[in-house]
Image (cartoon, rainbow, N blue to C red; front, side, top):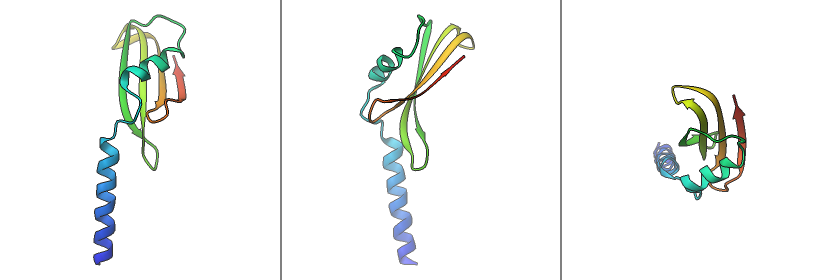
Length: 93
């Protein structure tokens, strides 16, 4: 029983430290990296730092759009590894 409590405590501490980590790549660096993946001048940019996968890791999701944010005419979402700065995916619409 004591071992189970110790494992749960370690899991809680590990989850808390992962959840608060923002990675090594700044928001501004993520935007600059993501700009290389688009071929248009955006009207706006939205950036989120999200946890992905199991085990969890931090990813910057950088969205570029034209038109209104609530109903964009065109948008691209670029996913960037928050630790390495590598582009992990690009979704276009």
